[in-house]
Image (tube, rainbow, N blue to C red; front, side):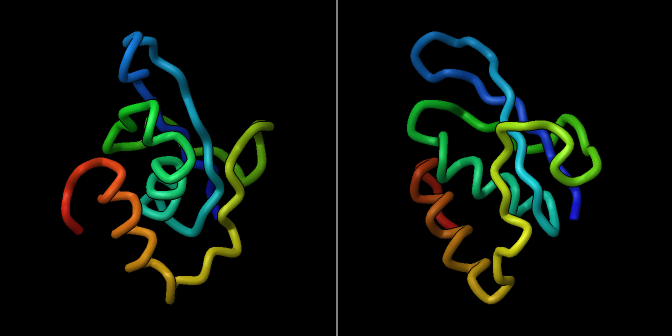
Length: 85
């Protein structure tokens, strides 16, 4: 597991924030961040930093996310972002 950091831009104010998620890979981390914050923020496509798991408080912990649910996760994140998976 790694902790992935993503920049997010507030859709209304343009302010840049950061969100972190610990996951098996960057795709799971980003999609979980989109599910949590995607209504208010545009989440960068690529992570901005990788750290050891659980290094920074306030992360989304998706370390136990089952790979079998990955297609569902990607569909939900794409729906929030207005795209198709």
